[in-house]
Amino acid sequence: MKKIAVFTSGGDAPGMNACVRAVVRTALSMGVEEVIGIKRGYAGMIAGDFVDLKSHSVSNIIQKGGTILMSARSKEFRTKEGREKAAAQLRQHGIEGVVAIGGDGTFTGAKIFTGEQSIPFIGVPGTIDNDIYGTDYTIGYDTALNTAMEAIDKIKDTANAHDRLFFVEVMGRDAGFIAMRTGIATGAEAVLIPESKTNIDDLVETLKGNHEQKKNSSIVVVAEGDDAGGAFDIARQVQERFDGYEIRVTILGHVQRGGRPTCADRVLASRLGVAAVEELLAGKHSTMVGMVNNQIQLTPFGQAIKHHQDINQQLMKMVEILS
Ligand code: F6P
Image (cartoon, rainbow, N blue to C red; front, side, top):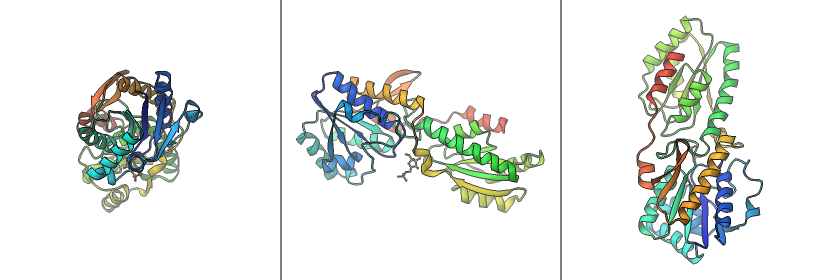
C-alpha cells in the first residue's frame, strides 16, 4: 500500500493522539508514501475533509488529550448513501487502507462499510468506556479512571468535613467499568452499574448500616447508565427513605474525557497504532487490534462490538466486603 488514511471517531479519548502519531510514523517507516488524516470521523470522510500527515505533523502530540483529527458521531454514515459518498471520497483520493480509532459506534460503522465496500479497514479501540471485546483495556480508559479517582478523592475530603453522603456520577452509558474501578480505588460504599440491577432498598440498608457504624461520610459511585436512574434521581429516592445523612450530588461528566493521557494510555496507544499498520500492510482487514495479556490480538469487528467485556463479579463482591 502506498497511501493509507487514519481517523478518530465517536467520543474522543486521551491517547488518541499518541495512536495517530504511531500510525503515521510506522506507516512512513514501512514504505507507505502518503498518510492522510481524515478530520471529524465518518462525517469528514463523507465530506472529503482530508489532510496530509507528515512525520512532523504528529510531533509534540503524544502528551495531548483530545484528538488533533477531531471527532464526530455521524448520522449520515448510518445511511447507505452516506457510506457510498465516503467510499467515493476514499477512492478519489487513492486511499488503499484505513485505520479507524474509536469504540463501539466506530466499529459498527466500519463493519457495515467493509461489508459493502472492498476498502480494507483495521480498528484500534479508543474509548474511555473500556466496553470493547478483544482487548483488556481501551485507549483512554486509564486516564479517565485516574481523572475520576482524583475528583472523588477530593469529594471525600469535603464529604468527611461535613458528614455527608455524596452520589458521584461517572461516565458509562452502557458500561460500568469506570464506576467499578473508581469505586474500588476510592473506597466507595457502593457502586451502581448498568450491568447489575440496582435495588434502592438494599442500598439504603447498606448506607444505614454504615451510618450506625459511625462512618461520618459515604460515597456512592453511579454509572450514568444505571437502571435506577441518574445520580440525582437515585439520591432523591434514597433521601425519601433515609435521612441520616445530608446528601449532595456531583456529576463528573466530560471532565473525564479530557486531559493528558497517562503513561499506560500513551504506551498502549503507541503499541496498538504500530500493530494496526503492520496488520493492514500484511493484508488484514475488518478486524480490530487489541491487547490481551500484554500480547497483540486480532478480533473481527463483529465480535468486538457484539460481545461486550463482562464486569468481573469478584470485583462487585469486593466493593461489598471492603466498604
Ligand atoms: O465516549 C464514551 C462516552 O464518554 C460515554 O461514556 C458517554 O455516555 C458518551 O460518550 C457521551 O457522549 P457525548 O459526548 O456525545 O455526549
